[in-house]
Length: 292
Image (cartoon, rainbow, N blue to C red; front, side):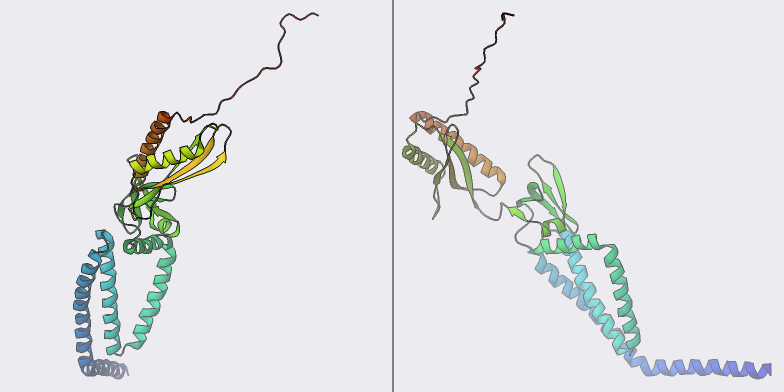
């Protein structure tokens, strides 16, 4: 009885091995074709990666972002080849299981690295945006400075005090930012006031001519002078004019030069720029020797 069971077991094993061998022989052409397709897609991925790197080199200055983008593209192409190879092997169930498992794993990783992935995708977005590039002077999230680096996690800003600020990419994408470098010309604002005894029309004309001589305007640009209000000790006005400026420092320099020129012109014409004066009047006299 035991000998009979042993023979049946050996026969069952040989039948199973024979079935596998027959299946292998029958599926050998598909296996070879699937292998060739997968190898072909590996070469295609390398070729696509080189082309994409040449294209992105003109638009992405950061090597880390460019290399990561190329790797992602190559991985996507290889995955496509892998799925096609599984389809040629008639492994539909395995393909479905792989896709389902990849979805679950991807969801888990996405939830665990939500902040990191947000910054990573934001970094990819920033790398293609022409509105912000390395070397630009920007104001964002309460900081101002020159952009020195854009990577997959953050951007680095060098402030005017020579300190560096690291800001997550998601903050740049979600929050407004001002880029001084994107425009070659900017408008400068100067606020001042003159005494009530001044000839207002003469002050206006003198100020406009002084600024025009110092800062020539281009095209449709013009120096704008407008009185704003009757102040406590002066009649206040705002002055606006255009200058070449790609950094906040350029605006500060232009405002400084404008104030100097306006003060010189006012001194030459005897125009008063008053400042507030406070007069204290003691109406109650104190008596030291008072009759009791």
